[in-house]
Length: 230
Ligand code: HEM
Image (cartoon, rainbow, N blue to C red):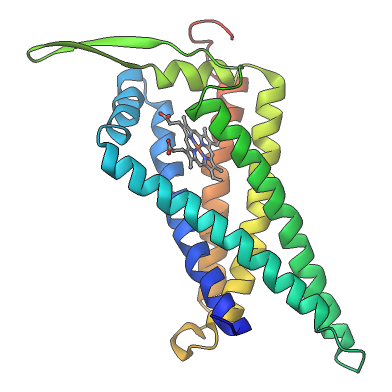
């Protein structure tokens, strides 16, 4: 872990874990387009139905982000400190530029993420309708958050749509560049040296981007208003 290769492997493993989370989150969120709001609300309720599972997921996702960011900053500092003045300079310069771009897009993704959690999870900032809905079924009825209304009402406000669109563009750039560094780092292992990985990674990144960005854009431009605006 003290070596720069060890740190790069930590970056790759936490990065891949975050990819897995993003793919699952994006696919789950696409249920917002189901014609029955109960589909998305049932999914949101299910995600929160087990406190141990919910907190395991939170610790893993937040922990992976923290470690990923911390190691990234450490590696960038080490790279900058080790920059030699000989004929390798140009190569090192370009890799420093790449890691600087990654730090900036990574910090912007982190800022988006902080806003997103305050918005949809903590409800600490406005800009969405937060209501409960009563579900009747089986032996009685119970209340659950109307997550469908929350998301639809949020994406009828232009500045929130703009914020989410910018957040997704930052994430897209970060993931696309990140996949390049990922295959550079794990290229140390022979089985990852095949040229097919780059294009596969690019297709996944484009899919994640298209899936996420479609949500605010389709709701804003093409979906009928649900329950008024916040
Ligand atoms: C258009 C894009 C996105 C939409 C519509 C969206 C939607 C949502 C919604 C509705 C929730 C709240 C679930 C609930 O409390 O019932 C949520 C939570 C969350 N989102 Fe997103 N999300 C988007 C993008 C992202 C991105 C890019 C990330 C990561 C960088 C992310 C990470 C999370 C996390 C970690 C949670 C918290 C889960 C928990 O409660 O622990 N989301 N998202």
